[in-house]
Length: 399
Image 1 (tube, helix red, strand yellow):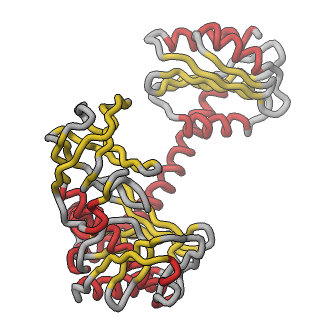
Image 2: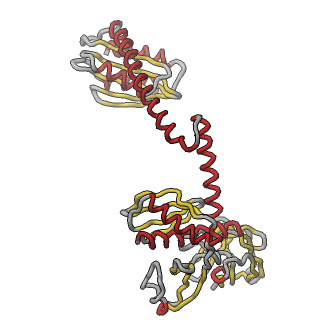
Image 3: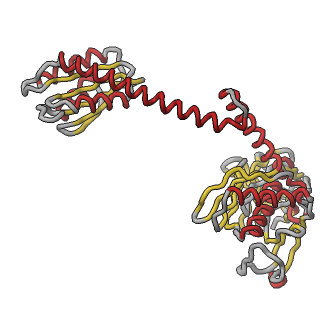
């Protein structure tokens, strides 16, 4: 059994220990010690990192009564080692976890919302509430929690039998927990059972910042960051908003207004572009149909061959051609590293698109399929693709 030094003193950064087990692991060695300052991942909190005799420990986990350190080096069983904590990671994690207690208490105190889920990933921390809250309510909870941070309230850890916690003002009560319970309490604030590491006072949290809220399983998921993570996130977003303001030639507070105006202008330009493209395609269609050969069934063969075309334009042209009766249409176009082709029969047209796409697959070395009245496919681009398109058009006339 490993003695958990971090539980009683979260500021302890180094200790001496004896190696109890050391086995090969997928990425290094699984080392079990008789005592440690490194917190194993659990209770929603990330694992500490650190070193054993200078060798990197990148993850710590707990199974039953063992705390397993994933270490880069092997150590003889029984040897004495020095365990060093990576304080930067520990402080980051303590700030997030203590901030979670304060924010959860704020939502509970102000709005009767219970925390039913806590998750901490790298630069992403969330709590799940059992009821919906608005953004303004989230800001109220944020203000409440930050006031507790700035008051620098004591945070205490105590160990009590489960029979003695009934009278405590617990935010979350779990009657299934028995034995000696670890209670983390903020003066005049949150009280709950918790296995994580916490600072000795709320001031160490520094700052709590809600970054996003969204509906989640009938309640609300609240994303937030604390301390250094919150500061660096704010700096990153400040750069984004400044860059957006510079690009839009406007003040930061008017960026959204400028984007809305720009979206309106873009929508107007797109409409004009669609109208212009439609006119161009109509003119092109008329010329194609005027020069179109006729197959044995008396239907016009309208073959459109385009370079640097896109799927949207191809579909639009096909719709135009399908609006004209008695047309067998083929659109063959080059886009990037592909040559695409599509075929269709308009009203009363005589032909077989499935037969045509089979021929196209053979000519272009591609793949595709469809039905008698419509088919499509594609093939890798080749410099001679236009010559192959002419060969296919000739086949369509004779088919």
